[in-house]
Length: 315
Ligand SMILES: [Mn+2]
Image (cartoon, rainbow, N blue to C red):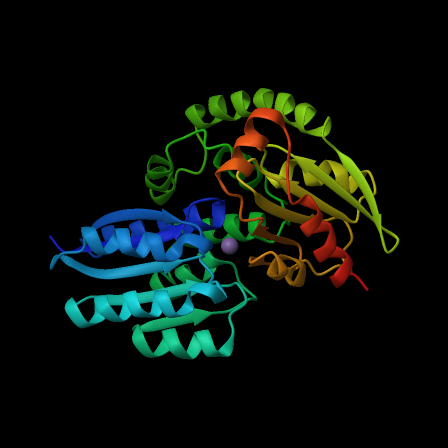
């Protein structure tokens, strides 16, 4: 049976909901489905993995909620071109992050459909193209929007986001559950309760590492540890921090803001990353020894690179 592959962002509700909509679309037209997860920085690796599972049965690839990092534009273009040259497969890409015109042109020429629109979330773009008249898909897209734009007017989107950020359920199962129109159930509720108690522990531990820096009059929080940035950022934003930085033991930098006049994108770009004005991320390019020190001794090197990037960008 012909198959559709969904390659999506695996770290948040927008990416998961996008995949669920693609799965719903595949079922509707009687096709098999497979989902692969990626992050924007490692999209070239995910695409290389995808090439390995490609065969003549795959009729379509749908990429969703994944931006294109400047550093890998050429690499990604080359892999996609290779796929198009060697397989009879339709490739569509739906994203809402910031793309350069150059990247848009390059990729748009190679694949069948490229939709980049910052006014919507990824799942909304997928839904509008693939299942414009499907009520479940529309509801899923709304849930994703609620979470992705930090609106959180819906209890379910809040809870699903939390479960996803803590990797509490196998993501493939969640994609399946959501695609069937089940957005919440007893099992998810149980997982959610577990997450809440785990979260309190982790937040308390991370707060012990809190450093406060005043940069050009802005209050900057720097915390270190393995924690989804959203949770701790909400808390610190309420305490009056303008910028919240979370550094993971792998050297990943997550940026959130407590002040809506700040645009985090240029800061993230200085850290080889990107994102949205309100939520962005980058990397400190940790080597094995940096990671070793962070994991085992709580020593986070290179943190001054982040502080420098912030001071260069803030007005
Ligand atoms: Mn998104």
